[in-house]
Image 1: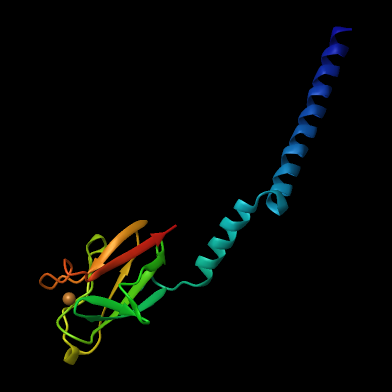
Image 2: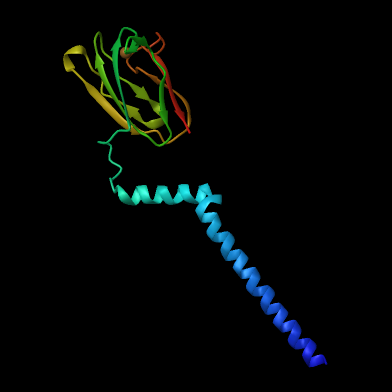
Length: 158
Ligand SMILES: [Cu+2]
């Protein structure tokens, strides 16, 4: 009698174990198919990165701003000291031309600075990676230009 009971318990345990495994495996498959968008996103990101093996190169900016400088403000598309908005991690390129006076374009937090130029020097530029989220000041480091209002905001968002 005891042997029979023991055998029955072992068989029952095996059946329960198999059912449990089947459920776990089944859930796993379902999760990958539809119930787990995060896993899908991560797979897509991996696919994207392996598909385009472009080196992180400062020559491939994600966003380019064209600014001009004058006494004492930056101008972009007719706007004075415009807010520049970028996404975290983007390679940012700022092209800068002085239309009046001697100026540069600087953001301390990213170590970004153009050379100081006069109108006859034409365009200068700087590229940097926006690797910190927050609101930062860009400004002209020549003389008292910053104090005279030659600055604006660079906003890096998630
Ligand atoms: Cu200036």
